[in-house]
Length: 103
Image 1 (cartoon, one colour):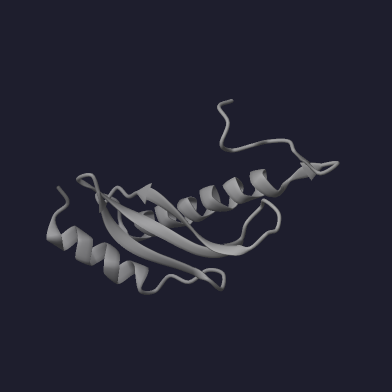
Image 2 (cartoon, helix red, strand yellow):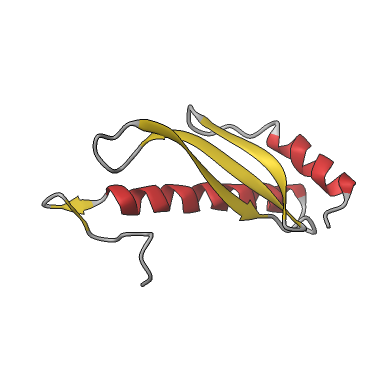
């Protein structure tokens, strides 16, 4: 179970993080491990492309320095962006690299 001080430290760091409009970051206890939950308001990759909230979870190693923790948050952003890019990339209207299918 995460220590209360670690949760507070992550919360404090996340208060200074900004990314694209519609993105937000919250610390979360993820089954006994501390992590960040990334919320983003984006259009769905499946027509009719209605906007919705997408949520992803990323475990954080709190033994890192503040810079190391922020790098892990950034890596979570990259992972989320890559997932979206895989869903949106199409050839002749067909998804080429479906991130929901096993490789």
